[in-house]
Length: 171
Image 1 (spheres, one colour):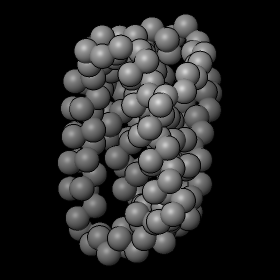
Image 2 (cartoon, one colour):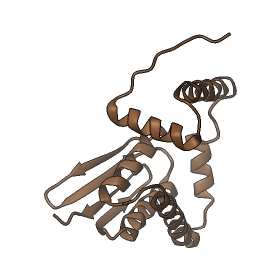
Image 3 (cartoon, one colour):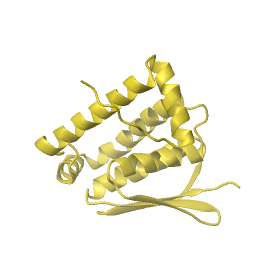
Image 4 (spheres, helix red, strand yellow):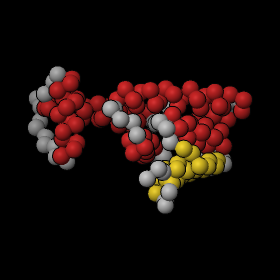
């Protein structure tokens, strides 16, 4: 037995939803049922087993085990892989799209990251509890990602519980 539910989407999300439904070759009702089912299963697993895979303590411990001499190699590899995937997904990976994706990813993973537009640059900042190695890798990785798409980095700073970087904006 099934129960009917209704879902309201804004115009942009609705268009994207219908595009995905068509690409997959299903119908909106079946797609909605699958999304709700998968989300509920994920939530149940998270509640009963605990969301420990990416807990702060585990990430901090893993990152602290990385040798300082390996950081730049890891950063370059990760940035190239992520940009390659993003370029496959969108027609134009520009500053706006990359910024949106970085902020969305952090928000969806419960990590606070903010972006501040200034006169001639944009500053990204993050506070966390993952340690200095996390800060260095994330900060350098994001900077490298922006450089790969042709942006200029003015500065970067990282410490044990935060990092920030500035991207020069060409108006």
